[in-house]
Length: 78
Length: 149
Image (cartoon, rainbow over all chains, first blue to last red; front, side):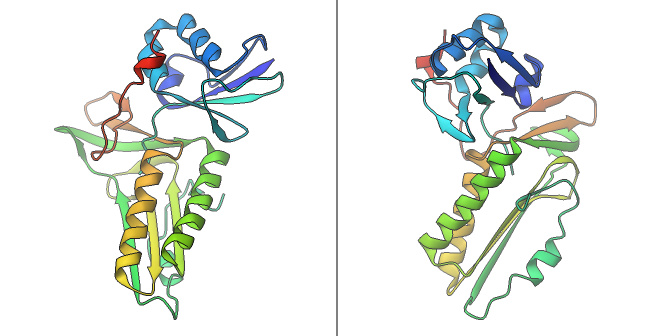
């Protein structure tokens, strides 16, 4: 399984965390999975970055069982 | 965590410990909660973060700025949780031999914190309702059209 953590406005669409099947091969597939799960979040998901092991990863980053993936909306600190 | 806190940020205390014999210029930026957003009265803000990642990114950012501008002082603390109007949400203090480097480093650090570090604000309005984001006035958020389905 892969653990997903959601933040900020994403929590209006998803729980704070959830687990997904580890057949999702990469970040691109994960993003599509999330859009398919909640189309109303598609614009926000298109702006999100993803991080594994507290490091930003790109669309082609391969996901592995046991990963914790942070789904990160646009930052708005300060 | 060193760079994140859930309690009041004691700006005076941070300033007191910022002085350095080789720093001829010290700059302090305090990001404070405004009572309005686009004409609507704001009652308070709420901040959350991907805490471990955010703390590590701020630490790396301070180290990067220290190397780039030869800083003698580099401090940044961001508040999390509920923050009232006029309270400090984030403070950045930079000290360098001369003011030019201290100003430049300070602006770089706060810009990176606002744009890159995984911290989010939620604005709560006095008349009810809330909104996540409140994106920085210096940057338009853009949708990456290559990933829209």
